[in-house]
Image (cartoon, rainbow, N blue to C red; front, side):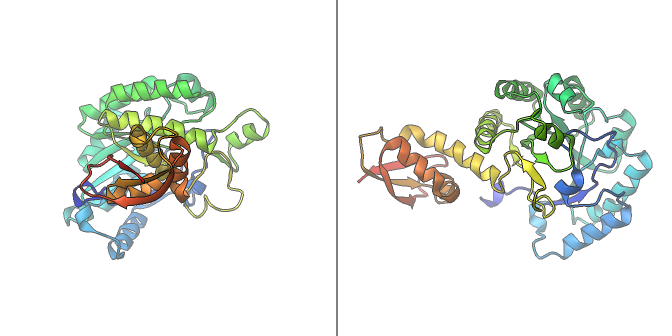
Length: 344
């Protein structure tokens, strides 16, 4: 990845379930974030940011951002919002961090709190929309509607925020076609970014109970890769970047028996990106029976995408072409997404 296209460095501050009006069927934030569900104070924010500054991985050239994740930030009392954001301000003024982002619910965007966020320099607000299907939202006990997301995006735009939308394919009642309609509606909103988090069955959630009772079937890994791949390709073809696919692999999430079922994979984003890339180059492959051995030439940084996870991509290419891939050779004279096939 070139210097120009590197993503910003994000320093996360997790506030598990703080500000949330209730628990959704899939949620167990303390496991997902690897943080206990107790109130975070301003002093704790300062400690996290000081530790980040001491880290050898801290790179000011990446325009570091402070991000509040894991709860409903705008569901907090205004005094608590002010306390947490005031703790960040000195670091912004000294130039250590470039901006602040946070995540919240679409139905928790009161006018006064949005004005408060602007006052403290918040630049990006991500909405946990999860779906644009009201039946799916009801079955997941989200407590908000798709119309709340539409209104929320408009309100955030009015106040000058960059807007992100988080989606969860595979929720109760969702279907592949239904999620396509969700993608359609989100594209109409023109968010600045999207995250895709396929639903997982986590120990101790209502979704686990439904799963064990046979009332819920999670996506398989193959289904999640296909659905996320299609959504990602559609968003990015329309100029909407997908900045995350799949949950981060926190230590507590990886504890034995925490993930009961669902499409968990530590490299889900790579699986999806690799699938998208292979679909793009597939028309350049020889038809079955036209070659026995081939060499692929691709831009150096795209070799991993062609090979796929544990070389699964090469096996798929061989199955589709009927030819053995004897070499994947770097060729930086080619543009991104291009491949040249040499028949040997």
